[in-house]
Length: 63
Picture (cartoon, rainbow, N blue to C red):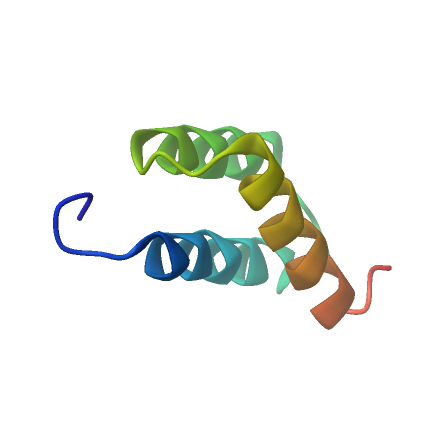
């Protein structure tokens, strides 16, 4: 994935994972840890990760 996805595609993937995590209105600690781990492996920066999380949270109505 790191070789074939653009940075924007990797950020979008992380944001999509956050959308799934927020879909049941309950953010589990395991979900939080797993998404963070995957974001790190994809070389998504902390700022990009946080932005993706906030956009997904807003979209889920948890602003």
